[in-house]
Amino acid sequence: MNDARKEKAIAMVERFMLASMEGDRAVTDELMSPDIEVTFVGGQKLRKPEDIKAVNSRRYRKVSKSIERYDVAFEDDETVVYSIGTLFGTWLDGESFEGDRYVDRFTIRGEKITRMDVWNDSAERLLERSGNTRQRGN
Image (cartoon, rainbow, N blue to C red; front, top):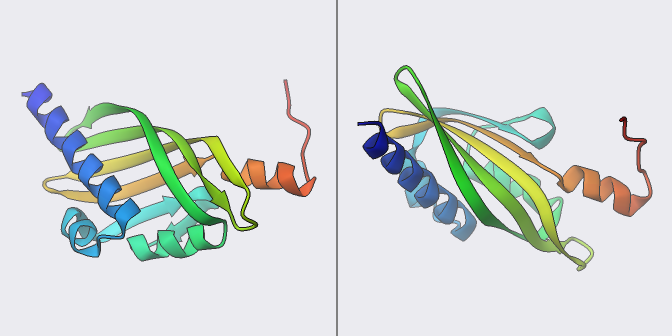
């Protein structure tokens, strides 16, 4: 049972991520719960994929994901899928980048994505590029 549930959840997340990167609102709207909770990098609360696109447009000219793997966990009637990999693309100033680590956490209940949490290294990389590095602890 869990193998089928796992594969179904991964397929849903893959479909959502591809549609998001391609800007396919019909698919993302189909897969998201109408009351989805999205917490984006820096704790920003968003409500829909175009909000993510708006935030990204203030950081990147173009950004894509190289997905390394999916991890799946089951929590009662929810399935949690972690998409783990790296970002690559072009900063606003035209400089290319690659290797920014990311983790996206999707919570699925029934046939809908009900929650999405997004973390990545881009903020840290932007700070380093601007000369505003901070001392990292041991």
